[in-house]
Amino acid sequence: MSHDRHSYAEPALVRTTHLALDLDLDFTAKVLSGTATHTLAWSGPGDRLVLDTRDLTVLAVEGAVDGEWEPLEYSLAVPDNELGSALTIRTGQHGQVRVSYRTAPTATGLQWLEPAMTAGGVMPFMFSQSQHIHARSWVPVQDTPSVRFSYSAHVTAPPELMVLMSADNGTESRRIGSYDVVMPEPIPSYLLAIAAGDLVFEPIGARTGVWAEPEMAKRAATEFADIEEMMRVTEAVFGPYRWGRYDILVLPPSFPYGGMENPRMTFATPTVVIGDKSLVNVVAHELAHSWSGNLVTQDSWDDIWLNEGFTAYVEYRIVEAVYGNELAVMETAIKQHATVVKLDPLSAAEQAAELPGLNHRSQYHGTTGLGPLKGCWFLTWLEERFTREVFDPFLRGYFDRFAFQSINSDDFVEHLQEQLLDKHPGVVTAAEIAAWLDEPGIPAFAERAISARFEVVDESRERWLSTGELPEGAKHWTTQEWLRFLDAAPDVLTAEQLQQLDREFDLTGTANGEIARRWYSIVAASTYTPAYDELAVFLTRVGRMKLVLPVYKALVRTEGGRELASQVFETARPGYHPITTAAVLKILKR
Image (cartoon, one colour):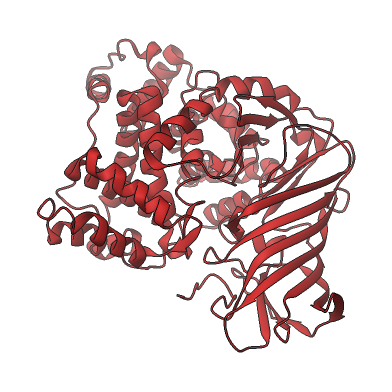
């Protein structure tokens, strides 16, 4: 097994096959405490188990012998800023090891929200975010995607709160203060998830539904009403859904991502619930992870394109099947435009660092999003060359062959060669495959998605920039058309241009987060002060990194913007997730 440089674990020697958690949630102290019991499978001689931790207080470690627990020797290494501390346990190859511990109030994988930070404003809320390597901040675990394990959990919490995990939770919101859940399928540690708050359930289909605060639940269920159809069309092409239920938990606005694909319980941002289903591609993406990522998993974060590239491709197919080809093409064009814009100013050496060949492990941590975009583009190219009649069975076979396994790029390339290239010779050349797998950047022969509606938007934008004539019919544009208009607009516009757009289309104060982040980025770069109050409200209300980080980056480019960014951050910081906080601090220090 390849070594995962993001983990101290030694899975070639021993690995966890089942994890049993017994946890208590203390909202006053903002800590989670209890035990993590590892059932172990040993692969060879050795007497130590190494677990990943970050800022955990280890209270005791025990091993099971003939049903009795005995204390074990252990040591906690000096912490590394990124990886945390290795917990080394001298085990004598025990079949089970139990660690008693508690988390720190500052755990990077947990957020504890005061009632004022929730929709209801009465009860507190907490939730986890384990990806990429934050599970170790709330569970001592082999925190590498190369290790998969089933898990069970017993959780106690204040009786007025509902507790949910990435497991079989049922559909009843019974507030009993004590909860037992089971995840029978083996998952990697980054898919461990927990949440607690004033949560109720709204059914959508026989195996789908929404958990959310009462103020949000019905709106979210309406917005996500197409989930069952999404599942049906995905199963028809890529094979059965193998996780039982698929529910969505809508979190408070501080959630740092659009969604997190925790199996059986996707965590989602409320910023996609805007009433017109125009941002439900986020849900399609997280559902797609049920096949790509959750079912077939990268074995280290250097191969993240295997998770996210395949998922973006399956997302495209879901959107196309449920909402039509036009929307799918527009979404693809937006992503490809983002890739090309990021790559254009880079030298060949910089491209090699940012976007290496897909078969090359690199220093990539998933921070730029370029690797997954290249992976999706590659799969789309394969589909175009081989046709869906050939490519769809190949991809379904891939999900079947590697189901509930963790693999690397070499495993995929071997499967690609055996099951597609060798069986259909002459369709693509070795040089073309090498351009995707081994060379940096996007190959010159890769075709871009072309949207007729975007061509109209582009013409309207250029006409407006040259003549001041406002885009005809823009009041009826879709979200995607507005994103195209703003994405390709100059970074800096005049006050008159911004005032004209704002007066006609009410962009300042928009409830659409995707439009807002693009609009406020231009506002910040252009120092358009009339919109600063609403810009500050947006940055304070929303904690999703994709939406707020571009605005902070635009603000710090000017002296006045830097001052505003610092002021807003001090106000917003208490409601930001630790991951978001760390990202904003990097921008401000830069």
